[in-house]
Image 1: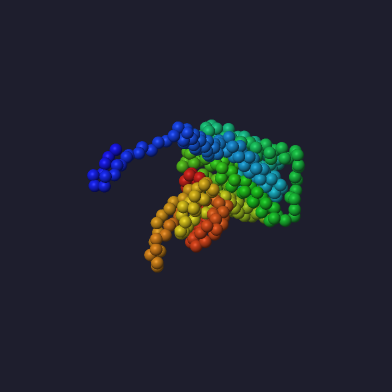
Image 2: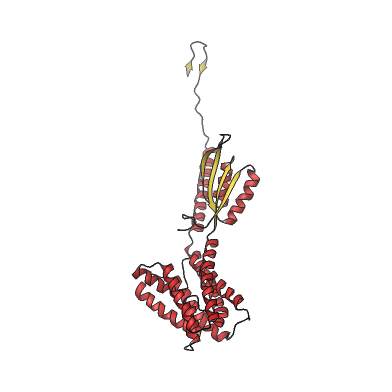
Length: 330
């Protein structure tokens, strides 16, 4: 207690008290929030790291891809004697020589290549490639007994060439996207790359060229020309499909509500973003610039959200198939 000398007023320092009833509630609330955060963190970690789900998803995609390759090869490539496409093309040549059926030849060649691959590469060509190679080989072999095809399905060779190219190309693109391949000449290309330092792409190209050229001595010139055309079409189709599968959207957003937009990007779309300070060249007013990248479907959602919360936002969207980093290509 103090006394003010000038005014004669007594001042008393009062200590704030926290009642016993309030203290437990405060502790209880803190504990509740902590538990909720811990649970949320655990859920997020579980969603981000689920190796079993990823493995199952990959092998389902591999199976679907092999079915596409198998349908294109068995129903369109084999009956028309198209010789492009690695081991399946070589199987057509062997089948035409009456040494064995294309399905049996494909199985025999792939088994030999798998043994050679294990000998020269060890585990270098991966379990996924072994699985896809075995599935394709036995699938084509079994199809000859389940549904024998001795003639083209139509009398339009160009139409059948399109399906002989498109179906295997789509399957090969999906396999490439998840880090696998159909085996066959891919194994030879990897061996050449390891010991002769020639790129896998060049080795595959030369193997396809040699197999396709072999048809000129065995098949009709018309079939040979179709095979050459199919070889070039396949390479273009695979490249385009891979690019479309990897396609993402890169967005620059000049806005006045960066906090709301970034919260939507990080919490709803589960993507990251970078905020930069920008200045208008004409008005010299300070602006917020958000840089972000995401899948096309997510970009569409973000566009709709921007139109709702910040209609004056200026957005540029760029298509790209090569974004390297977390959440994209590695």
